[in-house]
Image 1: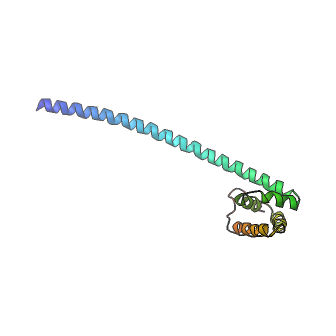
Image 2 (image 1 turned 60 degrees about the vertical axis):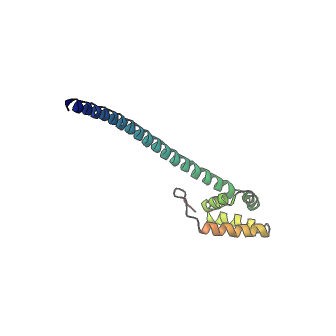
Image 3 (image 1 turned 30 degrees about the vertical axis):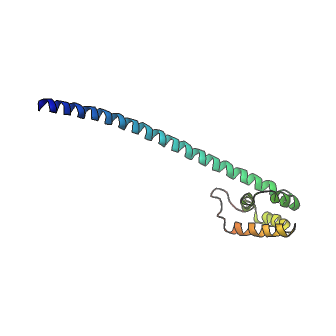
Length: 131
């Protein structure tokens, strides 16, 4: 019986050692994941800031174009990008670009109407201010 207790005590000590090692490993992994999450969050914030800056730059470039040039450029762009850019532009500049786009054919007039509808349902960017 004494031998059985000694064996049992040794098994418990080995189990305690193994559990402590696993606990340390879990702590290290948790810390690594936490650091990776923090780095990821910082990168997302940085990318969002860059995206906002690029969007403002594109809106400024298109605003400074002739109405025909702006309409031609918007024609070649994806609708999602057009909505984001026009939403960032001053309302007067965006309306001129959309007006010119809508006058360049029936298909483009329908596209302009679709873009206006999508702009209506779009929430403003959190860091960019619509004008």
